[in-house]
Image (cartoon, rainbow, N blue to C red; front, top):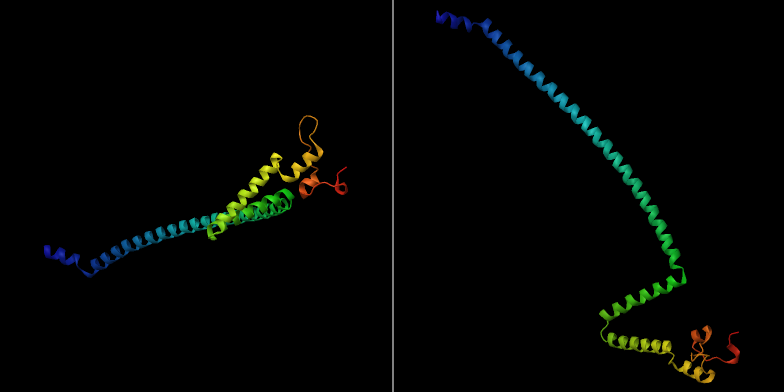
Length: 174
């Protein structure tokens, strides 16, 4: 009887049924994986579209910011150029240029530094003497014109102080 049961289970009809059952199981598994893959692919597509939208928004924001910064840079460049045209700023700029050139020469030119330092020291002494009223033209004018009412010296007119020339009758200020 065992042999008949085994024989009957291995008959072509049962073998066909086993094949159909296994094929159905594999078909269900394949369809399940296909649907799962389709869902995942759809999810990836939505993620990709969201990412592309965010990237496009970020790119437009970056372009707007770059345009704003470019305009601000141009405005500041024009403002710097306008401010550099003022006479006091021109003098400060020229002084900065000379200071940088001096520093460069002190570093790179051998033998220049001692002569330059001596020239600067002499110029500083002359300016301090002029400010103290001990310069040669001011000594002469003090002796010629005398002192002011309360012991103060008479100041030079602005033109004579700038030019460094003694006052004569032809260039006196009114």
